[in-house]
Length: 338
Image 1 (spheres, helix red, strand yellow):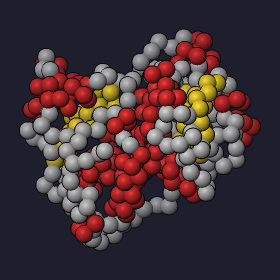
Image 2: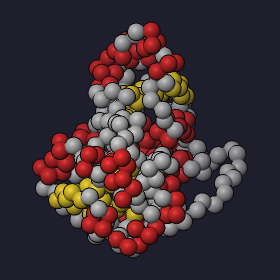
Image 3: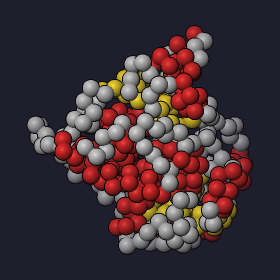
Image 4: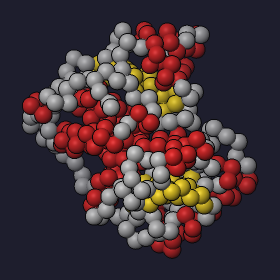
């Protein structure tokens, strides 16, 4: 069970009760995440963002989450800006930075890097993505979004059909997603990818061992049938050599408005962790005006769920609500598209 001072390194560490509790806390934090309310419960606390790989959403959403709670953020972005290029070990880096901060968020191109850092740090460490292995806080964001979207449709995660589409071999978000959603009951997973980019069996087996149905498809026509959720993901071209066969297979699995209307249920939810790849075009922009598309609600949800993580592991989950107040500045937001 997630508690004060815990690291967040893998989706495997979350029980269903953890997800329920985090979702309830995140819901209470949403007005703060949107800037409609103010809370300074983490005033004086410092978070260190150690991002050794490129990131937009994850890095900034972690920073926004901490800042919305009154904390300060120290940012490092790129290996070339750190002493690792001088030969410093991850362990030494972690020990040094934990003397400056109260929590560390790390992204690194090597699997298990977050675990190494957590082993040396004196403060909690959160894995913001480790190579092609995992991305547990994206899985929390995805769970929170799926739960809200299905609830709005009168559905539950239990008994649902979740399609995971795209690069399932190197796409760390898909590994964490199938792991995370396996804590629910009677879920059917449709794994749709080019054969060369299939889900590693060790992740599919997590779902199978928990009694879920896992089906593998190579076409949208078969894979989208009966979907409650369609989770498309980017082809991680920086992690493998693209050959013509993979590109051709990826193009056949491109999700656009026509393929959605032809093969998916009318009320299916479309998610994507972003960024979309304009080269592969795994999720076409002609879907953007469809109400089924929830990717921007998904990115918005990343802030309150990460805020919920912070208040939980820093020990203020039971006290932040007493510190919520009105903002001293007028909020001005343009209306969002559906």
